[in-house]
Amino acid sequence: MREQPLREVTQLIHAIEMGLVEGSYSITNKTLDIFKYIIMSKSWQSAEALMQIVRAQSRILQAALPQETVTSNIARRILKMTREEFDLLQAKVQHFADDSQASLSLHKLVTQTSENCVSVDYSLPQQGLREALLDHLQEVETELETSSENISVQAEEHIHSSEIILTLGHSRSVENFLKRAIKKRQYLTIIVAECAPSCRGHNLAATLAQEKNVEIIVIPDASIFAMMSRVNKVIIGTHSVLANGGLRAACGAYTVALAAKHYSVPVIVLAPMYKLSPLHLCEQDAFNMVGCAEDVIAYDSLPARDAKVYSPIFDYVPPELVTLFISNTGGHAPSYVYRLLSELYHPEDLEI
Image 1 (spheres, rainbow, N blue to C red):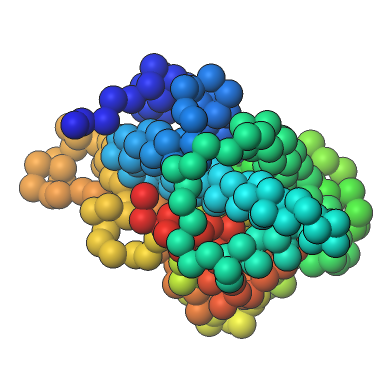
Image 2: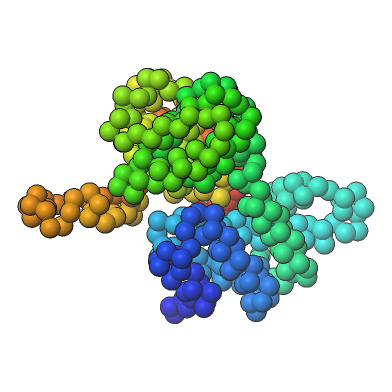
């Protein structure tokens, strides 16, 4: 039987495709609202039934928006959350008679349940599961709302006065991070690569130029290598972080990372936890998107008659070119991404 999308799911897909909802944060927020609606009002009686609904709607979102991995990431968080809350409630019921066991911590209850019961029957109805999930969901919403602030407060640990910083394009995380650094540090110089053909770097430069005690320099992408020898740090955002610690970032990020490696300049990537994805780079067709080539070469120009022009949206940056990830939980090396993924998602939910 073919899975039918909810009305809210089709509305979100339409809004994203029409450009009404843009940015990973907004898409994550809207997806979380849909799953909250499912938990609150959908007629499910067991954890297994809820997980089936979440998986079905997540598959629809994934098929319609293959590049927006944050929708699947949130679904995986909901699935693990459902398992944990079910296990916790089951463990409390089993150990209710023993006062010492009833006061166990969440970690001990979950680990004890997983050790004693190899396979858990999630099809059993569990009283209080809906309320427990809504409480846990509130924590996820709070984490999402404060993620940008928690990243930006770490700016003064990584940026010092009189440093020269290079960034690419326009990321809201990078913008807030640099604004915080400008307020806390003096005489910073920020070099912004324009990220052609969209040239979103101009927007970031215009925003940062309103701050005091900072010098903003906008450069074309062709000048990245020439300017890199003067740079102290590279700070960029990313669309998503892959399972091996690699990046799906804005086109041009690979150029920046290679130039930084040549001059031994550290590359710092700002990535909130909801951008961590358990996917690997398999093929470019599923990984990348191709944008309009009109900004690269005019359709009615003479060279366009005999040329095939591609304008990719994303770049793959391998983990060996990344020095440090800064998330809302702190700084991590690329090799630590595997551990973070094991904490965020359940092994059975990696493939939705």
